[in-house]
Image 1 (cartoon, rainbow, N blue to C red):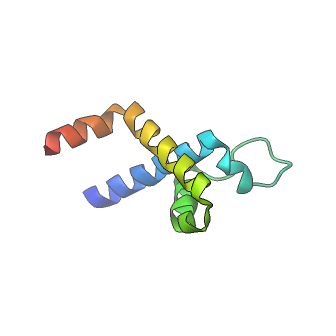
Image 2 (image 1 turned 60 degrees about the horizontal axis):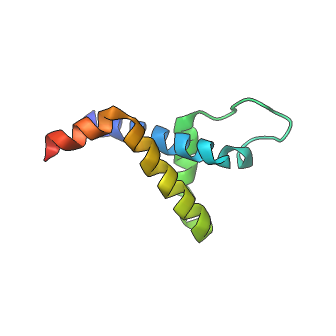
Image 3 (image 1 turned 135 degrees about the vertical axis):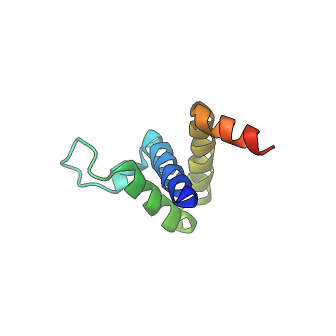
Length: 83
């Protein structure tokens, strides 16, 4: 259950990172102004198709993912407790 919860959270954070970059616009119809996919679903998409992105898009997504993880205190606390 712990692995499942961590995986869900990481995919949601990945979705949040992609949304900050505007990648979510590629996932929705251009007539809709609001979010059509959850952050988790967006994270699943980015994870599944990561290697189909250009190198620049991959770098942008990973940098945004790292910045987003740093903003969430939970991950810092978790990683510090493992050390």
